[in-house]
Image 1 (cartoon, rainbow, N blue to C red):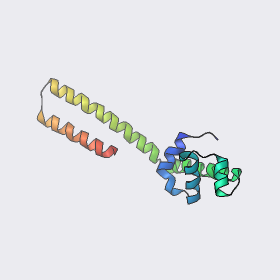
Image 2 (cartoon, rainbow, N blue to C red):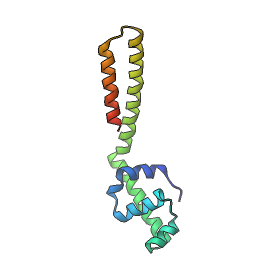
Image 3 (spheres, rainbow, N blue to C red):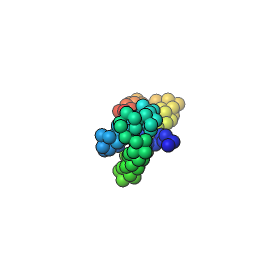
Image 4 (tube, rainbow, N blue to C red):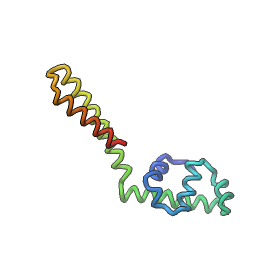
Length: 120
């Protein structure tokens, strides 16, 4: 089974919605980098049983994303915040070259602070 970066991201977002066993198997496989055979040996089940459990958990994670779209929203928010940051730089640059407005400077500083809070 090829390890999928999307699964790791979705697990971070939706992992608590899986059963404890599914969480454990995904964590062992993706976070601890254990093989299917190692997980099977540790859990006292077959390698195929571990594979099936992981595949079901992965499918559930993708279903959660399809239905809830939290990862997609996070990516859009991140992209929007990056664009806002670039626009703030442009506004600051134009302000310095032209009118040197304290109000514009204060507003861009406040917007910058808010974008940092949102991105945390």
